[in-house]
Length: 368
Ligand code: GLA
Image (cartoon, rainbow, N blue to C red; front, side, top):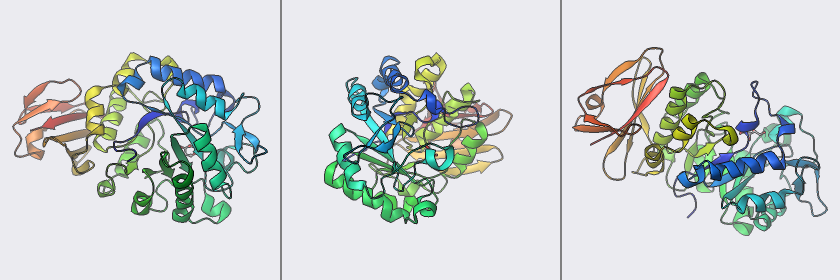
């Protein structure tokens, strides 16, 4: 079975957004992309478990080729998609690619990207065959208003590609996104591996807490091979501070969310690398104790999230959304617990000790 633990990897999209969250298409080139894939290996992300390298929107040429296949942009992606996939995979990574169910990619829908027939509508089988031939391991299939532009029905359109993949590329991890517009958590578990639950996450604290709030109540839809996706990581991007970045990783860990980094891996600070590759945080993310983490208390700016761990312990995340530090006691939320371990520092304490949570920050503890 595919994606038995939340997929981990890198996706190119967030890396190439400017401060207005618009993509810098000219910067998205074969070289800049391959450099990121190399950095994924050299920086230690691959060793930490990040395995999929996903080429998002913006690599496509103006039209399909003589076989009806999507091809690389004539100037920015030469020699071509096939060669890009081969080069990334030669680094020991798995490769993902971006496609859409309608006629228009999101780049075309929202950002004036040029092209004809770049979407998979009517090309589902041709595209699935191409993915198989190229050696694609992961597909991000992105809605982009196909209900408006093409009159498509989301469950049916996403299922159509699932069927094509089952026929030609059954090992491909199938990641869909309709931003929660059509409650994909209710039908996507039948035939996809992960589904976006919310709109795009941007690299700011407001966007982060707003996205986190929209994950409340979705925990029962998630299971091994079937993951709620609150969107790709923005760690290391935009205005996020160290404690905000760490809080982001902590909440993605407690939610069993896919961990798809999207920062500039070529120029990554040690601080950001330390968060992305933290063994303890990744271990909580990858652990399945029977349920995705759920919100168990909210008090002013403080949220408490709880997740059962497979060894019988419990992970508790304290998210402080406020502007002042708050003091908490794990024993208030886990009555039977006597001790705790702070996952970030590795330090132990008594469950009845007061512990401090930074403003715009989070603390992840394991209680037993
Ligand atoms: C949408 C998706 C993003 C990204 C872009 C590409 O906005 O939500 O993650 O794939 O499209 O254009």
